[in-house]
Amino acid sequence: MLFAIRFTDHQSEYNVRKHYLNYHLDWLKQKRGVVLAAGSLREKHNDQPVGALWVVKAEHEEEALSIFSDDPFWVHGLRASVEVLSWSLAFEDMLKD
Image (cartoon, rainbow, N blue to C red; front, side, top):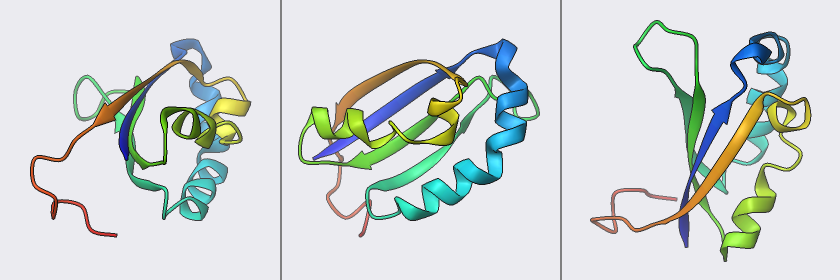
């Protein structure tokens, strides 16, 4: 199954993002088969990130919720909240493994 995971950041914790960005990116590289797409969200192109959006492949919602438990951004308190939604592709060939 596919899930969309939407993170909202603590805006007062921007230094956490700066400090742990490379660790976070290395962590994401290790999750490539599970985290199919990931990136920061901003209100406008050059603004500070307000959160992130991931597309995740997991067997069930509980697995999707556990995927980010050791992500440096999560562990070090950047994330204020998370929303996990089941996601269906409009066309099955849009994302290829």
